[in-house]
Length: 210
Image 1 (spheres, rainbow, N blue to C red):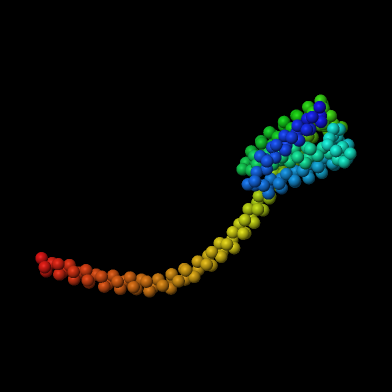
Image 2: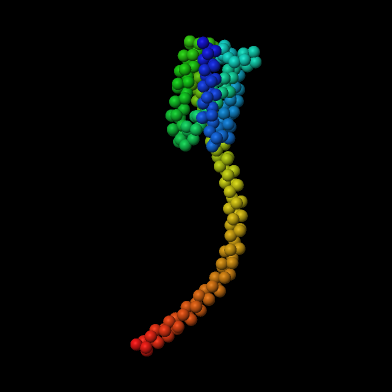
C-alpha cells in the first residue's frame, strides 16, 4: 500500500507542477522550489542521523536515507503554493495562513505514522512536526520576501540610468526653448502691435463708408 501511495503522490505532483510553477514568476518559484528542497533534505538528514525519525518505505533506499519524494518534490511544490498564497498578506495573515498548512500536515503525518510505514517516529512527536513545518514555512517565506526586495531594487537601479539618459536628451530641447523664448515673445508682440492699428483703420474706414 505504501508503494502505491507514493506512486500516486508522484503522479499528482507531476500533474500539478505546470500549474504551480507559473511562467510569469518562474525565477521566484524556482528559487523557492530548490531552496525548500535543500532545506528539507538537510534538516531531515540531521534528524535521521540523530535517530529521531525514519522513512522505512522510501524511493532508492540503498542511496538515500531521506524520502526524496517528500523533500525534493512534494514539499517544494507546497512551498511555492504557500509563497504565492501569502505574497500580498500582512504578518498576521501569514501566521493564520500557515496554520492551514501546518495543522493538516501534522495530523496527516501522525495518522500515517500510526497506520503505515511511510513514517516512523522514534523520539519524535506531532508537536515537533508542527514546529518543524512552521519553521520551514516562515524560513521560505522570508527568503521569498528577500528575493522580491532584491529584484525590485535591481529593477529600480536599471530604470534610473534610462530616466537620466532621457532627461539628458530632453535638456537640449529645454535649452533651445529657453533661448528662443525672448525672440518668440518679441515677434508675437510686434505682430500684435501691427495688427491692432490695421484693425482700427479698417473699422474707421467702414464707419466713413456708412
